[in-house]
Every structure is written in structure tokens, then in C-alpha cells.
Amino acid sequence: MIYIVTIILAITLAIFDKTTGKLPNYIMLIGLVSGLVFNVIINPISVVEWIIRGVMLIIIFLFGMKRWLGGGDIKMWMVLNIMIGAVYSSLALAIGSILIIIVALISDFKGNAPTLFLSLNNVALTKKVNTVITTSKGYPLAFYTMFPVIIFCLLELFGVGIYAE
Image (cartoon, rainbow, N blue to C red):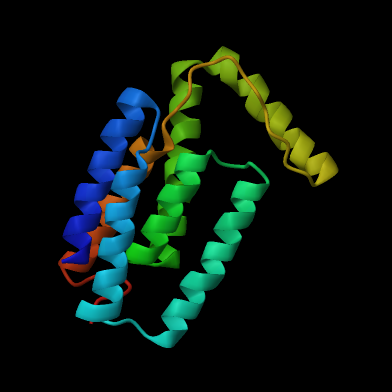
């Protein structure tokens, strides 16, 4: 049940992010309440899993404090963490980020490759991640995160995911 709700939430957020560049709070609230109701009342998860998700929320909060992700992306990650867990939510954002890099390089290699190279070079030399402000078009993370979220949820629905019993 939670995986079907998560798929609907991911598609809804992807549509909003792609069309408006915003992730509405009321949709996040629906996801948060759904995740809490399911994981606390309908199909309670273990204390260890709650601890892992709690630690992950702290890590996500630190990402927000460092401004490594936008506010909507941070909220989306937190809601996904509550709904489908730390592993799936983190993998989904990582894969979504990689998809953005691939799309950015394919769509405008000459414009984006030097920025990517400079960013990677800066990290390698200084061991610091700096925010790069560009004037190029943005790439909606929720849209690219939707694909791995749907795949992970389908794996669980078909009984072959990491949480399958």
C-alpha cells in the first residue's frame, strides 16, 4: 500500500517540479502523514529502522544547512525517507542526480562539461563542495528522482526489493 502511495506522490511531485519548479508543502504533508500512518499503525517498522531513518533525517537536515540541495528537494528527501526508508530515498536521490548530470552533458556538453570539470577539480583539490551558480536552465530533481522511486516501489510490490519478506 505505501509503495502505491509513494509512486503516486513521486509522479505528482515530478509533474509539479517539471512545470512550476516548486514542490508544494501540502503534497509533502500528505506524503509525510501517509508514511507515518503506514509505518506506525498499519505495518509498524522496527525500532532499528526508525533509528536509521532518524539519523538519515539529521543527515538530510545537514544537506539543507549547507545548501547542497534546494528546500523542496530536502523536503522531498525527508518525506521519501519516512515513506520508503533511508536506503531507497538516498539511492533515488543519488540516481536522480546522476541522471541530471547525464542529461545536462548530453543537452549542452560545451556549456556544462567545463563547469562539471571545474567542480570535480575543486572537490579533488580542496576537499570542499562549493555551490556553483549558473545561468543555465535548472534540472528538476523530483522529476529525475521519480524514475528510481517507481522502480524501487515496483520491486517491493513484486516481492524482490530489499524490504520484501
